[in-house]
Length: 244
Image (cartoon, rainbow, N blue to C red):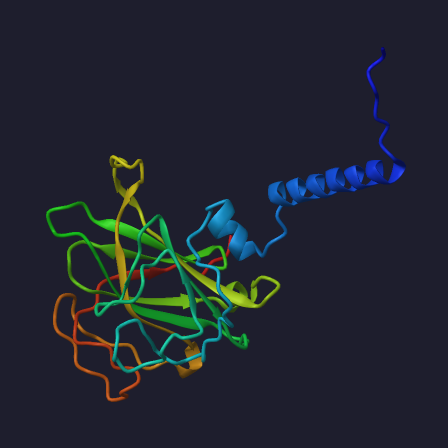
């Protein structure tokens, strides 16, 4: 006696086909997720350290930014930074090969002056370290860290570099820090740690007069409270205004 056979009905085949198509679509979406670049770079490709969140990048051009709690200055609520740890009482600290600040403001038709107050985890017994500063991918200057003293950056950014922004009009300031030792037990590179305490970007026509404090000597406080950062000496920073 022949075994009974079952012939599926057309609607059953149709439902099975739809389920197979749905599964294939879901698998394709998993393998090719359509997400924002911030999300993809942070969670999927892990190619940068910018935590994805909605933010305007707005920066009031000319205002000093404080990265120290309860310090006078713009409170950085809308500024985006990547490669820096969360804010603490002594500023923000880099934790990889770079630290990035992203700012958005009306681009002026003139050069800008970038000033910042920084430290590095080094001392006079170690070789001096150089940190390259790039704006929109163009190197505009270098700061040199010879010891544990504060380094005040003072760099002129050519107007052409600032105007070379991406489509969304965001200006990117990047600090490339050097690797100072072989990778550790977790295979992560050991890099110089840069600490930023304050930063300001201002058109050169509205910039405050430069200070004349000798290296390593205490500096006088500025009269303008919004510009006051802290007493300290000025260390050398070079400016490279020529575009490649």
